[in-house]
Length: 401
Image (cartoon, rainbow, N blue to C red; front, side, top):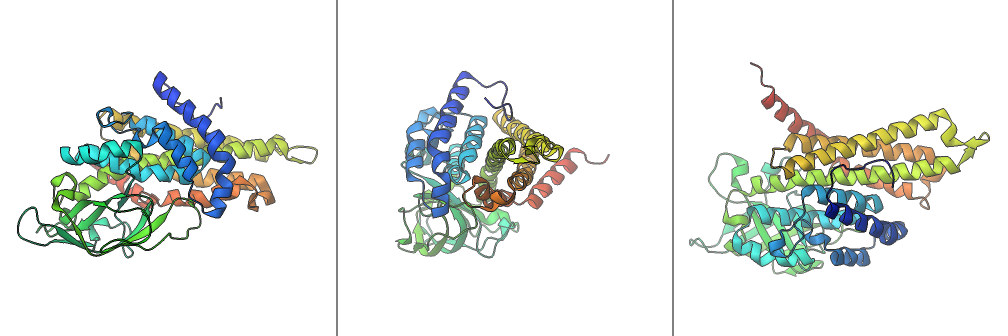
């Protein structure tokens, strides 16, 4: 087993899960990832394999048919999957966040309705906050839901457009954050999360709900990223997450917080793979009569890469363990996401440089990683947003006396 990115103190069950996933990655993902990615093809066979292993229910409580595993277990699984192909980890990430939000914020009826089928992968989750004209300012959401009637059970009608919806076409349950009129002078208190059921597919999938099609991306291919357009779409009041109007911002931010550990894990996975490719190539490629790994310039680069891989992994697992222990972890999750994503970009570029001209060829795996790594710098909040979160948390903790 490789020396880097090992995790101390795992249970026998955690070790067994990770060994199974690692074998699956080596046999079912790595041999096919480049071809699928270059074709922008959805990895249906791989997704079916993850269903069989129970990965869609990994963190869902056992009482709802899941495995009831921790955030740490999930993050380590994601790290392995991203090592094989980052897009595959994206297939389960939004599903995981919606399941988490339902588990922690859903009503008993909503949990009973969705979690058992989410555990099997029959119901697949996605979530939507961003909009075409909206960046990091989530409180400025303009998509609006208006209740059509005076009774508390009257339907809501949603109008507006959402953007950057991962798994938008292949999911059938989407947690959508929209504006409702709660009368608060604080914008984020006027946001509500709805659980929107929809068919899989593209076009007008339901009356008033259109999924226009896949957005063509630089990387992160295979997994579908879409828009979501509402035009008079009706949704029952019972589909408000937790039955709480105006609580959507807090519910979504809770989901995003665990999502940041997920993104950190993905960055760790890509970094591990980039290092594996670099250290292998550096021992095979020869210049001036010896392997380039024996040239100090390359040897030092490998040492720096490995140190970054290890540091990112430790910060990621620390954040996950804090969450699992019930402690506040917003600063640590932000730090892990910031460091892991930035190091991922650096490690991947160093691996690319070690490959020389071959790194620019689509025949070599490092070319794919070079296009995947930048996504992690912006997903679940840019590096600048992470620095904002970290600095605010630190200033509260270290307030001047």
